Length: 363
Ligand SMILES: Nc1ncnc2c1ncn2[C@@H]1O[C@H](COP(=O)(O)OP(=O)(O)OP(=O)(O)O)[C@@H](O)[C@H]1O
Image (tube, rainbow, N blue to C red; front, side, top):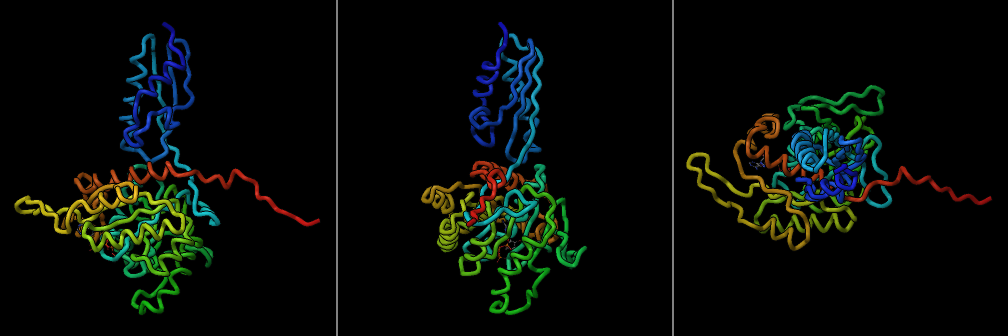
């Protein structure tokens, strides 16, 4: 029986992409299906970085098509194409940056910066071009966590700045631009201007994702930033205790108010496993993050344990994803990163480049 394009399509329709949970036809990944005699070739386009996934997906799709009666050689070109997605109405995406992901928290100290850096590193490990912008005015910690402490960005033309680079991730920090010893009342008003400068005057090199480590909280400064930074979506980090969750809710509402889609929630310091006896304790309570996600119809991206190693590695300039890539925690960060990328891929695409600028002239 001769093989047909329809039969190949049906076979791909019967397979679920393990990351998007959609079949390859409904998810618009299957392209260019060609049948030449017995031989079949097709493309599978993934909208998220997938270094660790490509081989598995190639085997999965080739296996299913090979099982069709009458099929000879099967070749599948599985590749990644990350596109730019829409930002808040009235804002323009940044040139050279396809997607900005804000990492925020309702209150300080919940592990937002640690989550942001591991998220950026995990996206880079999966093959994406990634930058991190440290806008955490209360404690800019990205230079330390990336082993860049003491370094300063260079300017080649006296106007724009070159990002520093660590582990393949381009980095810029508000700590480079303002005196963090200065009292907060003076720093506050400078934050918005400094952030705009970092966004616009950094020579970001062709980024798929720019992760922005936002200042914690839901005050005026945070609201202004949420309005001014052209983001694709926001990730909220919280710990499971009630008091942090109340603040996380406020964070979620703040982004909703300014029409920024919520990518999901990360629960940090979820459980503590004693490194001596292995006993597991929910120090900050349990189930709060997931319950909140159900209430607000937001994706629960994952939960990180409270683990000495996570803090030590971040402090030493080699966060878990690069410092202990084979650890369980690194695996959780990578899973969260993949979910974030898939979720970004599902938001509305940026069409601004497709429309001509319309100028109304009185003649
Ligand atoms: N899962 C974890 N296990 C152990 N320590 C952690 C974990 N996550 C973060 N930490 C540590 O907790 C401290 C606070 O984390 P971090 O700076 O990421 O929080 P933050 O929410 O960004 O705080 P702020 O916004 O106030 O700067 C850091 O010392 C960090 O190393």
